[in-house]
Image: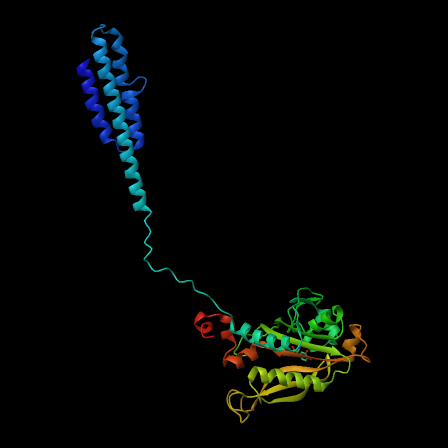
Length: 341
Ligand code: DAH
């Protein structure tokens, strides 16, 4: 029995020492110290010993058990330390590696131009309105005095959704004039920027989708002089003090009288150059005094109130502002182009 205990001791200690994992160590523990373990089997035989032999053998057996238990604990501690070491190695983080830069975008030149315009108008007490791009022909045309048969209502110019030509993509921001008249308290001072749609082929100056900024003022005693004064102020703020404008008679169904406003060419100062096609002037917007019929249709008494309105082409304003030669650049969204602003 003495030899048996010595063998168990040396075998077990060697095995514990070599265990590679906590699981392996545990199964070794069962193998030696478990209920059916090798050491347990020897202890069970104690009863068969004589009374003289038993104390010394009992003491030895207890020593072996303590040695095994201590060895298991030591081996477990060693494995744990190894595991921790490994984890620290695996999860090591090199804090000296430079971080990845977050690439921040910026505003599209169209929105830069629009923000400038908005700031100017907000500074003059205007409210900024947003409105539907899917619009009723009633608002886009009828209530703006462009009756059935008006050329702008043609299927070849307008994106309709239905055979009855009732629902459409708005072809101008002018329907926002009517929406404002119908819902706002007088006096009214609004601008309404947004997308508009027309069946145009894409080229250097055309796109089936583009942007306008509508503007409208309605109050008592509003005159053409107010329109000119306001627009001149806007142009000077946008393009610099002393920038000249020119108003040419024109026709729109919803204004009377109507005009177009040109701005003196920023490139040549009015002498004539390729940018202004030799004219010295560049067209910027359509405008006019709101037609009494339009006011009346919206429930406003044209004997008491008068107003003016205008519609700016935003792409053109942005192209002039940032010296962009081709409209397509604005919509292609090539980062090499956009990064320049
Ligand atoms: N809606 C016109 C267009 O798309 C522009 C315009 C002209 C707007 C005169 C107006 C205006 O408000 O008074 O060509």
